[in-house]
Length: 399
Image 1 (cartoon, rainbow, N blue to C red):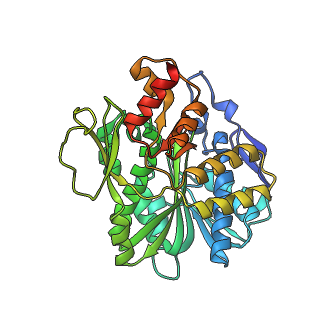
Image 2: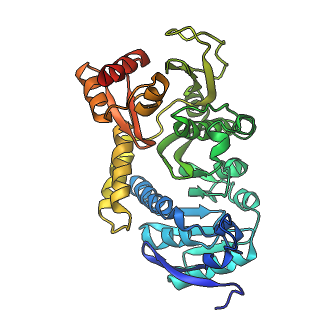
Image 3: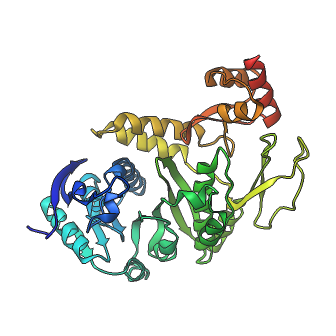
């Protein structure tokens, strides 16, 4: 089949798909080929799609029934094709794209992988498409929102198109607002204020989850984040939705603020939607900076991650080693403190040489504190030790 633009056939996971030949759309070094191509395809998101397959299979096994799946911003249909081929127990994959060229490619790719009987492809605005499935008995078990930019414009219709117990996947690639470079844009889009801290990628996940929580609560729906990750240029969160005013209230109770001292690294959490009064740092007296309102609950479920890990070991994924490393780190930090430290940031502030991270963690544990690594930053660690103790240990180790 000819599409009227340069294409190539690639293999990813267990599927073979036709995608735009990205090299044909790079005229100058600054060009971002995926957005220049007539149909969207991003090869760097392979890891994202691998993890989505593991999440969906885990969700299917936990529910123990056949699932209906939706991807309203499908592009070339690669993710949808992988769901249909690689996830056992999927009975229907509803794909959609506003771009007629994308619809043609996605339909062709479904046929190419012999899953045309499972896959339906529509050509509509994503919100209009999702709204068609908002009625009871029409809803999906899994909706995957993977946009170019913020997921916020699609959140409300995605929530309404999910069954009770359904799973919503959200990708956010607008890291500048979420990490505090453009705080007003973040407040406008996500309803929370970010901070430019060493743990800004965690704040990004919590701001996305917080926005989802408040939006779902309007429909008397509660959320539980079962897995999240920060990789390269984006953050991703997966949340199970539960119907009912009580569960929605319970979710809202997990909203709050993170207070941060840029002077001495002290940080604390304040639960509740009401903004905390401006106050001084209890450690050094400097005025505290505030991030939020955002999600203060767990951003991963240990059991869910463990099942994903088991699933990953049974598959022959190209990036298996990296996936298993991410899952091990996420499991390990799932129940640890909110926010993390980085040794180099502390040393930079105190004008000290950087000691080995392992020595810092060992000393913290020796003194009776919890200390675990985080997947958010290879130089980051979570601990229940106060900032003053962390500073003291780092200083002693550089003496």
